[in-house]
Image (cartoon, rainbow, N blue to C red; front, side, top):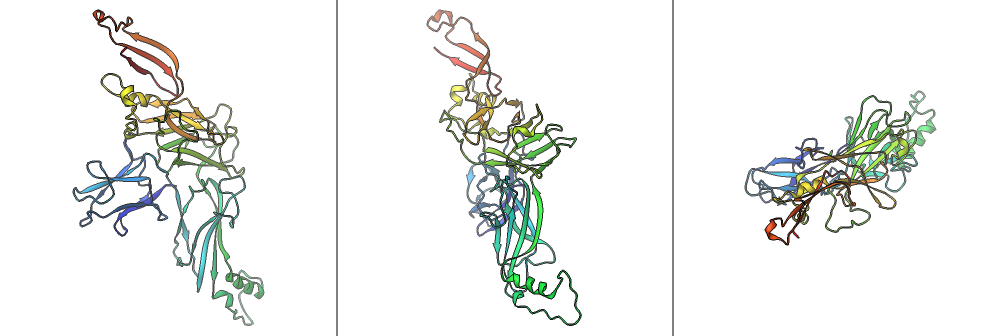
Length: 428
C-alpha cells in the first residue's frame, strides 16, 4: 500500500503518474526522495500541481528548478525540474478498488465498507464515514475496471474489512418476467423470489460483497523477520521471529501524521524532524486498534528505524552558531543528539527512548514494545546524564594574559537518547 498520485501543469495534462514514485528506498542516504521531470516544449510558465489519486491536492511534495529554488510553475529555462518530498508530509495511502457497476438503466451505485468492533474503522456499512464512493457513472464490464481510489489512511485502517457494492436501477423493478411452462430457476427457488429480487433494485440492492485484509501481515510463527514501512519508507518497523505471543497474524500499518506535539515543546526554537508516526495493528481473531506491550513475549521488542536528511539537519540555523565547535559543524552536534520520543496518546507526555545512531546512514533506531503511542524525532531536550568530563587546558586563566590560556574546552560524555558527546566553548 503506497501513497500515490500524479503531478501536471495547466489544465491538467499529466507529466507523470504512478504508485509509490517517491520513496526513501530509492534515495541516497541523507537525501530526500525526488524525481526529475523533463520539460515538454511549449509549457514554460504553466502552473504546477500535485494531486492524490482521489484528485485532492497533494501537499507532500514541492517543485524545484535546476538551481534548487522552489517553483510553482514550469521554469522558462533549463531542460528539467524536480519533484521532491517535503520533510513535513502526510503520506496518505490508497487502495484501488476494481470491478464493474452497470445495469440497463443505472441510477446509482455505492461502495461501502464495514469493520469489526474494537478495530480502527469499526462499524457497519451504513455508519457515518463508511461510504467510499457514490456515483451514477457506469463502470462497464466484462473486464474489471478501476471503480474508486479508497483512502484507507483517513480512518487509519489495519486489519480485516468487508466491502460491498450496492446498486439501484429504474428498469429492473418494472420488469415482468416472461415465464412459460418451462424455465430455468437459476439462483431463484420460485418465481416470486425472482420478482422480489427485481423489485429490490428500486432501492439500493447489494450485488457484490468481499472480505479482505489491509496492512502488512506479521505472522508470529514465521521464521524470518517482517518489515513494515510507512507510505514513503522513511520509517521501518521490524518484527523478528519469536517476539510476538500466540499464533494469530497481525496486520500492521505505519501512518505519518502532520501535526505538532500534543504538549508544546519547552524550547520554542526546537522543532520535530519530519512528521509524527502512528502504528495501527489488529489481529483477525482479536480485533484491536494498536499493538500494546501485551502482544510481545517477555523481553520481545520491535525495532523502529527512522531516516532523516541533510536538509532536515539544516533546519536549525538558530542553534548551530552556539552549538558549533571552532570551525563550524554544528549540524553534527544536533545529529548526535537526536532522540526518538514516544508520545502518550491520552496525555501527550513524551518519553525519550534509548536511541542509537547508525553512522553515515542518516538513520536512527530504537527498540520498544510500546507501539500504542505516536513517535517523533527531536533534538534531545532532556537533561543529560554525564558519564565523563574533561577540561583542556586544565588551568583556565582568562584574566592572566601572560599564561596565554584565555579559552578552555570542556568535553562531556553524556547519555540522553543516544548522543556520543557534547562540545562546549567558554570564553570567560
